Length: 352
Ligand code: MRU
Image (cartoon, rainbow, N blue to C red):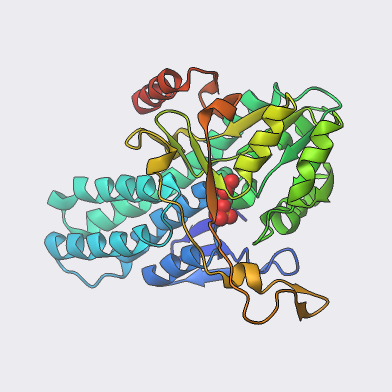
């Protein structure tokens, strides 16, 4: 199944519970929009495009379960559900982007009454999810050319099918290169503290039959220094107008090590994650998560941190645009200077 799906005869939103992977493949069926918001906040569904699609379906669900009998009352319910969904996680641009798209569809049907509005919401969410898969496949095709045959590449976090509706962005590039017959090997950053690399990326690569090894996050520089890595691939939660990238914590340090060793650093990004309303990375809100995610690490059933320890837990960091070699979007590969390239790719995306 896809990472997140609409269930017509529920109505409900169905999703893979990513907190249980790789040990159990459990499916959640959510019948209330507030449960979709909680699933996003608790990271049952995560990854910017998957969060966007989940929020879109969550809003469609809000419309379908609302008891409003006229358009005005339904619109009020939608605005309040959108607010709850929007505040679930702050960093990914796709969340607000997806809600805006679905709200616009509902708004466009107000004159036609609540039944038409509900249909418009569901159709818009379905279309957004279908487009995500198509966009990722195109990112994969554009990016696969950047991977030389026989290369070892490094990947941070999880940007695969699980982080999107299907196929993936940065991991989609790796997948597409593999599907096109290239031989490659992936070093998978484990990605503390939630271990999206060790749990989710490794689980996906295992299924695709792509050769990989998990490394601790701090090991990346060592492999780059030894000349073992041809390129680094990350995704993005949000790209600012100047090309600064908000992505999973650790991306910045990976980019620094890549720059110091002359390793190409690629960021795969659907145009839905580009936010020209923020001038640079400083203006992107960075989510601070519960310190317990850092402190509660257990090895052999025992907590590692001493009782009384405190922790800091920013979920994302900012990689300055000067450390990015290129962006891979569904409309092609963007090279510096990024401000112009990002503005014109977004214009093309809106026109298409
Ligand atoms: O906290 P997460 O797991 O939602 O963070 C995910 C990432 O940082 C991904 O790299 C990003 O969302 C892009 S996913 C295609």
